[in-house]
Length: 480
Ligand code: DCP
Image (cartoon, rainbow, N blue to C red; front, side, top):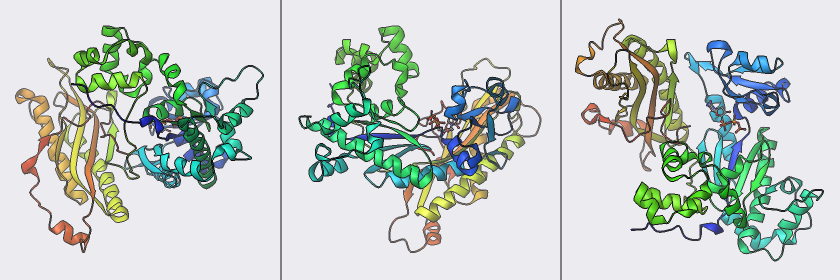
């Protein structure tokens, strides 16, 4: 049975805003002497000068890439400035970046529904603001168009050699005979340009944006012209964009589904999907995925921008690659304590600032066994009700770890206690707090609220296989 298609999603105005080389910009704001210089941010205390996690556009011109280590970056660009991520509790401290992201969100949220999608990405639904502008002060009648808006890239706009690109954009925005959808996008161009300039003025950060009729197209567009630029996808250009778009460029098609589409169906670009009837895709991939594929081939996506300025969950994690794998229970407990301390601190400030409480604590780990017949086996994720207080979180997380380890190593796995090597290693650990909800209104005090909560937590310990266990640090989506 076909799933209902999203209705009239092509008359919305959606923007995806993505900060440019975000961690670098945060560090450059702290140290303005680094501005304009090839700069990269490196992970704390790592092998060969640390792993690069953010690279400035000046450094990219010299061939510096995120996949490099500090020493390699110095080889291709001897003048590159390497800045270490701040450290707390022996691990990267991302709080400065999170707070900088919050500054940006609070500005972007001024013009429409705003969804904080990651530490440096935001979706905006600007439909109401665009409709209002169209009614009150339509761009077609504006004498002057803002310079930043004129620098927009409009997909499908015919910029022949020698033609004045800005003049073409101005004409596109001013068109009287444009259809309603394009007129709304013209308003979107002006609103997003203004918001981006406001972000620059108030935070000193540049960002790039995609403007389209849905989230999927806006996200694809925001990365097309960076840094400090915006790209627009008019309805008439959707087919041209998707026809040649390699499927791996779609976030959801990077994994097994993308490989199956390529190997089993011969699909290399999103446009290649157009040849298959919806029923055929449903037969092969199930009703929902089949319909979703049929829709994305046509640029259709009904996904709403969720009004969410605060993260859905909090997570704290650390990887222990190669020789740094944790091989004893006390070593794991030491690191779990650090991670739980950070998590607890963030939960307290969420409670304090936003009056929100989290209900579920989850532990994720990645592990290997040195003598293994079943190397595909994953370390099971475990969850339990969350109790506030650092010591309680530490205790509960450690119990979750032990339960997971017992399951992972199985009956013959040997002792899980003690400090000797037990034939296993942990290569990543993370704890997260989810199911975060506002404290019910009318609660007279937070202390009273907690008194009313149950304290028997381990009765409902459960496997959280529904949470993502793929990512290295396995933090649930929405964790910032
Ligand atoms: N980040 C990280 N580890 C990664 C990828 C990213 O710690 N493997 C951090 C550093 C980035 C920030 O997240 O600055 C945002 O990541 P993006 O992928 O958005 O990349 P940038 O903002 O650095 O650059 P771009 O301008 O290409 O978006």
